[in-house]
Length: 469
Picture 1 (cartoon, rainbow, N blue to C red):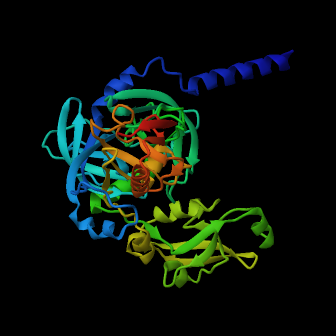
Picture 2: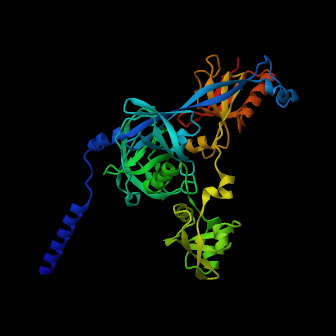
Picture 3: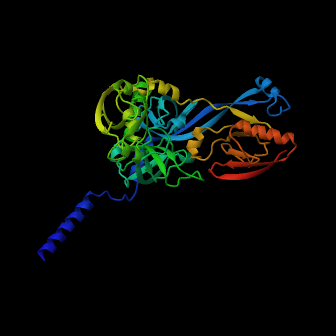
């Protein structure tokens, strides 16, 4: 009987302890939202899009030698395109954080704080982690938010997202951390926090807060197949990784990432067994760049990196992140598996941005030119990788994005700007010129009916029959 009494008391003790240490479910996020919303901003950008139109009242047949000959006589025109996003203020002097894809190629950037707008300049941007730092052109002082420790964010923790979805302005949503360390194939440094807090188009660049009001992530991507709204799968860049890049952008206007100079691949179970490694772990060196830090240290193809600068390399994806976050020029110890034994190599880490590898693979942010389809009285541009990533069009390899529709167009009222034409007459559209060639061909034959397959603003694919005038 005494034993049962003691067990009962112990159980009561543990239940009380768990109750006292557990985080309560919030009754409301109102106080938190009221405190944080003045530091979250809406971002709008404009960019100049170049269009060319034919000065002649006739069209040359597709492939005609005259088409290229008279190309220089096309009349260039320009128009303004706009986009929307979110951001947050980290310094009272007006330093704003957002996503790089929100402001890429922008001619003008406007940051709206509450009801007041400010022009802003880009201090620095990193397309690899999709981060940009802006400075508002003003002497006004602003409320700020601080970064929290994203490593402490656990699956199941409450989080709050604030942003500018669909241009509606300050919108608050809540949810939990659904998963950690997500790799969705966007960059070599993918390490996203997944959340079910509603994140939609326009939330990009906005903050993900913990219940202490600290930024633990930067909302960057969503998965919404077949629709544009949130289905509870959103991704945020962890604050710990982001803050290091942000500090570099503020200090230098550019990133300074560590560089090893190797190509790597996954260590499969079969490879691990073949080299007598206890389990499939680490990063297998596929090749070593000539005169790279790895080459100078004597690292060879076939080596398996198990530890870098005291940090365990459990998977292939871990190594690029660890190397990138290590200080350039630091002397580090690399532990590798070679010839069925563990050995160490000493090296001085290089800088990625100074390497030939970086210069060859650096993302190019060129402006996309519009093409006028005179018969349809619309302008279109090629579908870009940025479009595919932002809309999660995983099965789409090409298309023509509508950038302008005339009131006299047969598509007026049927389609909208930013709709994507992916097929015409059952023929896939790889680029804008494909659409133009198909239209020219059918009008030359005297055909009046056009069948299009499009992806609309809700990310829904549908067919549209059009009567040509």
